[in-house]
Image 1 (cartoon, one colour):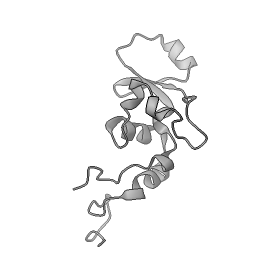
Image 2 (tube, helix red, strand yellow):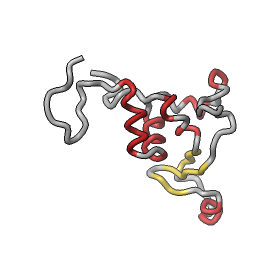
Image 3 (cartoon, helix red, strand yellow):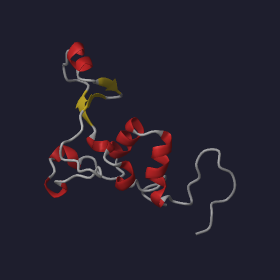
Length: 119
């Protein structure tokens, strides 16, 4: 079975969801007014701040990938943080394009009937 049961996410199709917000630990003491003014919100287990990384190029790719900060390295392609960013920041249609670029044909979406396609 594939490491990416829904398909390996395509960074090209995603265009940088992982770099559009900053997640801070929910245990961080933050003034709620400060959070609201900055477009922040609570998400499960974290505080999310809207922030587009200035190092994203026009295609949504990291322009300093080889020298990116440690925090950014936690967003491995297809990892927990990557998938969470896609779910939070992309529409279901966009998610389909992101994950179907290399979809594992043995995994069937909910409601899809019949045997997996041959390939």
